[in-house]
Image (cartoon, rainbow over all chains, first blue to last red; front, top):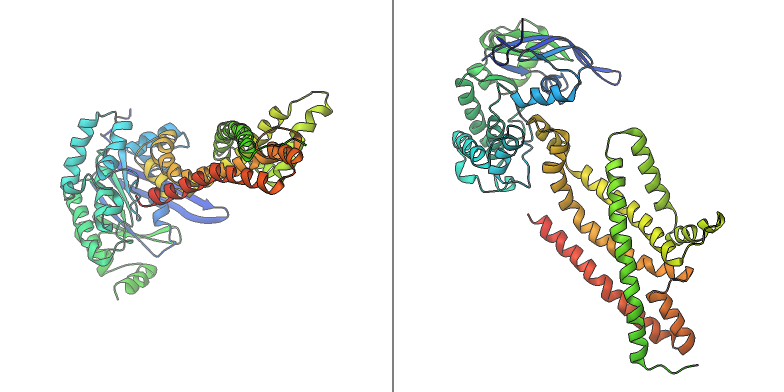
Length: 251
Length: 215
């Protein structure tokens, strides 16, 4: 069947993915299929490979074995294919990674102008739309250093959305935030989930998982150990390692 | 022995100082151009280019500048090529500046956090776009103060070229001392002229450091 972008039912598909750092295997035979509009929360102890997995989905890291398909296109080591996939996949990082030498507005307009070819006026209109959505329009002229962590992370979300991605990846978006700023970022993500965005989210925020996830994926030692709807996963985890993990984080 | 007034000595030294400035400029500009090439090789991610540039930097940094000047001056003579002190001095200083500037710039580029590369890449920007629009502007900010600071080393380095007979400030000082026998006065003026050349550069470096750090 010929591939038409944006028509695939499966947004992300991993088939038998393996990855090693030297001799150490970080990902073991991952198989995962994410439907369009589905919201996945990935959790697990540190070093379980959850961040590595989502960093492989947009090609920030390479996998050595298996196949990764994003919106029907297979990710290969061809740089052009990687660039094309990354255009359609937004990513939010633990440490925000805003560009400190650019204003908030410029952070949001850089890629749409350079990659999508938007004019400055068009890009700024899009940027202001999303900055308004994350409730930061009044900070547009400031530099990232002048904003709080929570504000910076909301800008990072807006910056990713300005590319109008089909899929959003979140790599522990609230782990580097002060406790009182976690909620404002989670609220933004809940809003995004309500719009039907396909989301893969590495997080330990179990309240968020319960509220928005269609499925929770639990990883340990590079493997997907359990996957289940949140109610089932939290109330009745099947795997021993899942139970131990939940006992530790839920007090 | 001829009689020179203090003023005559000073103006003769100032005339010679022009050559110190010219040689410094040539060394700095030439060194910056060559240094840029070496920097790009150094961060290119291509192993042979990285080794070659790292080897060049290590070699130049491990040899005293004076030896570098001797090698550039006497080396060509071995294969029967006459070379003027002027060309030898410029060549040696360009190599010297290139190696040190390349190292300053490499460290500035690598001091930009990896997350900046990743964030640019994750937005779909290509490698060169990420470098030009995201990494280079931040690296430049880090590189400016040490680059300006290093220019002081280049100016002072030109003094060593007096040994192969290139007449600049130091050589003129030596010659004037030989005819006036007033070493303290002559070399005090020489030192003052170097100070007048170098101090504004050091000052600018510190000023830039503070200004760029505060943003």
